[in-house]
Length: 432
Image (cartoon, rainbow, N blue to C red; front, side, top):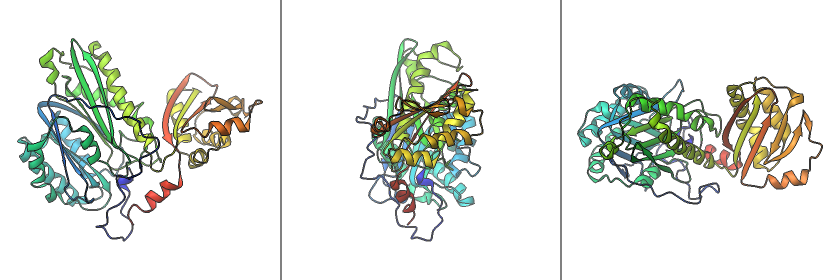
């Protein structure tokens, strides 16, 4: 995430970086869903003064006793202190609270960072009345700046007392950095004879690539699902959602996706689920994955400086894994992304990205289309190519690129956005 850009310049560390832009992305969803209450979850936000001024920057989510937790995290070899904390506590399988702060990633902060997570957990545990092992943490913001966890003292206690079950939109706003809009999604589905709800929120606009779990995202449900089953569902669900999104090819130190299942729906007849393979989970899994997909697409829509949402589909590859690698090669190409920003159907750049991916490809079988208009066929420009027609199609806010390799049945799809001058401005000014 752009919030995790390294602290590399000598500017005033007290100066707040750009956050919560007043200009909402033109790709933002036109409507925001009403987020229903989930039994066993309460939320509250506050201004703790971590880095930003005059905005909320800390979220506390309080869960009932017995809440199951699952998580997936960044694959960065330089993870943040909160990521390390969560990985260690995840083994217990139970959660009572989640603390998230924006403005400071608490990454590359050494022993000080680890001490900050321990102190935050201690303060939260006292506020909620639980063990520190049941506290989960996430941070987003500048890398390399020490996090003053004493700022949570008193704040978390007040939040625990005032938390309400319907503050999802406020919660999503509190965890934003360079995001231009809060990202929330919800789904309701039957589990057995009972209705269960799945709510989710996410943040992320830059430093986003799929070598991870996600940016920051938190999923809540009242379904009674055991930790091991929830972990399996989460790990599977991210593969074609968050792991199929890239903004700039950079993997954050702090990417965290946590799922919490309070089990409250058991009181209404929802069966307790111990295995991810339980056939009764079929409808739930579909809804769960839809929430993940919705949130991950919102992240792509809010890419820093983005003006075009881009879907890249690769078909006819040797395998699905090969299709994924080629799709990501296209999606992460600055030349492809800048061409899209300039509304130029430069299929030569797509050919370049296919060729450099290192996966099986045959130039003379390759076909490419933009928004349903085929521009290249069998390794050459399509005979019916019409520059004016394609140029008009490239003016659309959503661009679909399809690449057909003609080698097999492998197929995959990824989401990205264009690369504009605004991206450079946002990240060039982030610490200055």
